[in-house]
Image 1 (cartoon, helix red, strand yellow):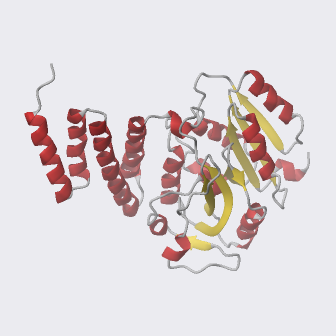
Image 2 (tube, rainbow, N blue to C red):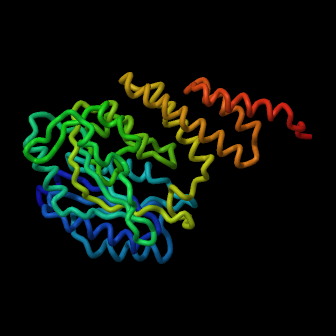
Image 3 (cartoon, helix red, strand yellow):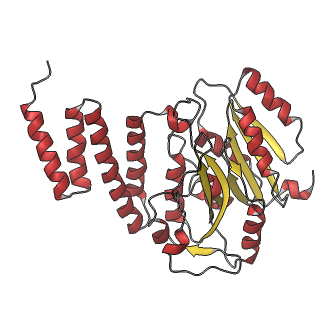
Length: 332
């Protein structure tokens, strides 16, 4: 093992479970990078049977830059947040990259650009953001901008010689989305300082760590290069985290993410953003419960939304719903 293997610039962490064929395509995309100053840490979250055999066969084909960590089998796995934290704890690199096991890096110069940016910077880069494209299960491209696409048109800073834009919290909060982990690079010491991923969250743990990270970061760069391809989960498949959680469960998790930012946010801008986001999610929860035939539960969230995000339009809607509820026959 060379010195570069012992202390690479980048540690690329890929959590995976029972998707060996998709995973191998993802791993191959990493090795298309034009530099080799990296290690890859694969955290297998309890694959079993033929799938486990397939991963073991792959492991034998790669050199010392690729390390496989096998977690014990659990019915629902340990979750991607736990797996990513395990990978980060084993990392040797100065910077951490994350890649979903069904997505791809598509820009061979991505890591070279980040390394050159780090070398040119006069201060530590806590976070480095890029962009990605999204495709539906049928292969059609998503038509709209997602995540933080187009951020460069909304900020008041100029790019450096490498095309990087220094960004602040206020810039990033202008976007309704958040930077996907596929196109986010963390300084490892910074990732550890903010506590890594929240392992209690089975959904949108990437959004949670993004909000905590941009709230804590001292220096962040954004490059508009499209470096990854994200495959939008098929809603009919149960092996995708985002489709395995019900809509109502998702709202409960989103409440927690917002509450954390409201309670612990370092900057007033973050706390204000989280309050707006929670008001939006409370209203969504009310609508979901109404559609589910649970008007009393929905009315609770309507009132909560009034307290967090008051508007006269929502007040009128809540009052009208309350009147209808009073006129409704009582449940036996």
